[in-house]
Amino acid sequence: MNNFRKLMFKIPRKFIFSNKFDATKDYYKVLGVKKSSGRADIKKSYYKLVKKHHPDQGGDAKKFKQISEAYHVLEDA
Image (tube, rainbow, N blue to C red):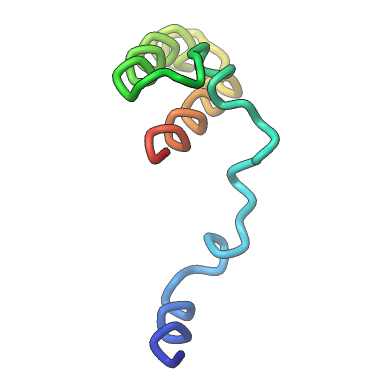
């Protein structure tokens, strides 16, 4: 138990109590892929959408953040 406590004090509190990932969001829908899609399809869709919605290319910053969040959640799944 002591090792767990030491670890908890090393992790910033903003990461422990963060609600960054919302379970009610459909990340597959954000990326426009099926739930049965593999990593290659998810990555391909992500790069396509990032190019389209990147703020430096005149895209919407909010949509870009949603796409990035969806990709980072699904790449770990």
